[in-house]
Length: 294
Image (cartoon, rainbow, N blue to C red; front, side):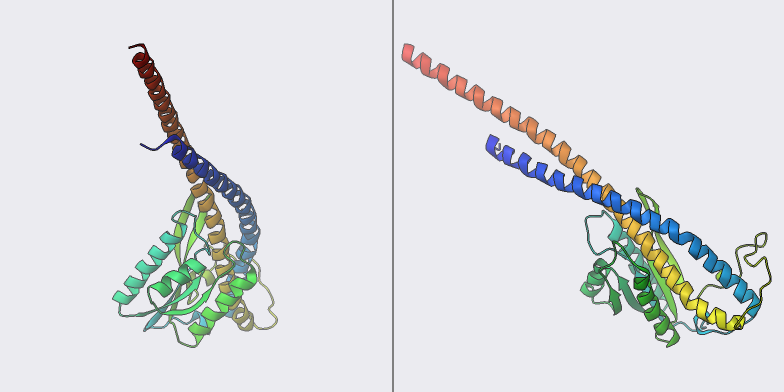
């Protein structure tokens, strides 16, 4: 049985750890609120972008653009797992990587090559550890991604797609549902889905008014398509950032709760050990007194 001093040291150590986990929980909570505000501010822009693309595509008619080209034979697929740069966030990183590797196995089963374009240090280190085909990686902005970060990833993916290095681009990320729920989402970024250019729905078309286009609709659409890819990447990065903070806040809260329960159990064991020591000392005193009287 551990001594009273050993139990005291363990209680002190766990108490210090609980202070850290509570502090990390508060920091993650504050960052989560800011991430949610950024997502809410970006959504109107993304909606207007889709409406503008649908209206321009409707005016341009049938066009053949590199980012819209659907290739009959797919030989290489780019998978973009979006993870964080740090751990201590529960299953946040693991579930994205697990889904990305499941996608990889499906692609390889179809006889196609897989190339990874990773976002986040966790994805980068895991792909390198497994010695998979890592074409390019980005890191250092998972907590607070900027639009320029999304541009860098989108440009690299678009260049690889136009050059024929990959025939399909899939992004895997955690979509933010609530601070307690993060949903792993797989989205095809390239080629750009035809549903995007067809508008919202029949009862609510995205081009209710006829416009005069200058320059030609085809030229405008050609400029809008890369911006759409950037916007989709930016939204995925923001969703992932909010999900990471939510997952970290939940993980740190659970860790603080577990530390509290462990402190209570150790305190009880420490009190029992102290009582046992006191009882032993009393017995020794009584035995000594009996020996003196006899």
